[in-house]
Image 1 (cartoon, rainbow, N blue to C red):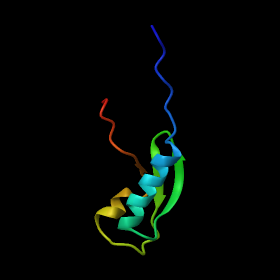
Image 2: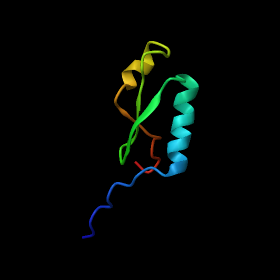
Image 3: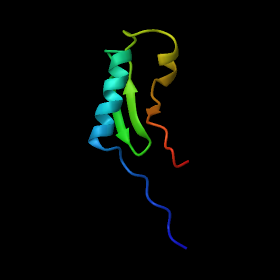
Image 4: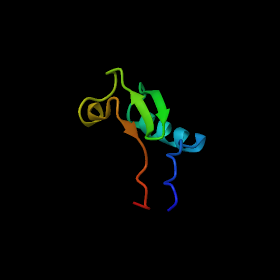
Length: 67
């Protein structure tokens, strides 16, 4: 049996696209971490309240059609 593929890091283009999308919602968001799970953002509370706060400290990545 073959070994499962190691998790891959997001490409620079994917990081830029995620950043641009999040900044369109909250201009004060900052990239906290980039890893195999996606891009994690930090929100300083200066942006909109509500659903965005539920993403604090959680990775953001596009859904994978292969799963």
